[in-house]
Length: 257
Image (spheres, helix red, strand yellow):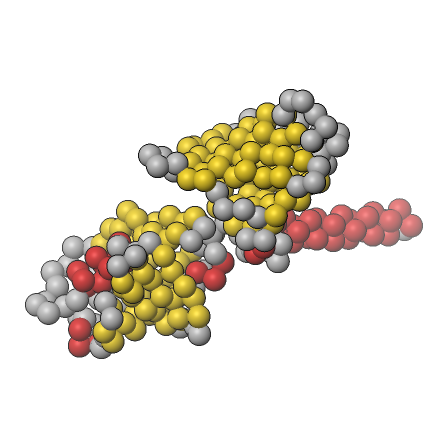
């Protein structure tokens, strides 16, 4: 009888541990931004030796397993941008260390996990007492603004308030998945899907596809889709998502979740 009770108790403990582990794993892979994530807009990592870099609006943090370079913080500085390619270079320094960080939009495969990231990262870093810099390479990605992850309904288009009569059935709307950089919705006549391209201070709606239903005369779906695909920047305030480009404010959405 004691043996049976012991086996039952052990089974309960194993189930409890498995449930806890599953919850922890689900939390890790949920795609929901943590409080720390919100401080930074880009993260990069590399192997052999392990290292990482986090770039935020206030500071840039480098961590590694390299002796003397375990945790180094730099003040944020604006990057130098290449004219003919999506390449950014950060020149960093503090009282003990100097570093150069280069980020290029180029598919990059992690040397251990095999995971593909959209950016290649190179770091050259040295303490001021050293003659040569340590050269490192790895992969990285921009962290899409978690506030975009929502359902948005159109309020204004090219500076004018819109009404249901401007569209066939209902107001255009988009639902943005910031974890996967995708969106879907309704354009005012057809269903639409596409992707978003996000970097710091940059937002684009790309690869937009719609169904092929014929729209009645006067429907503003075409005007809406053109404005959406002309977007380069955004702001979020008072439950509104405002899309713009250097020429004008294009679209205003209202949060409706």
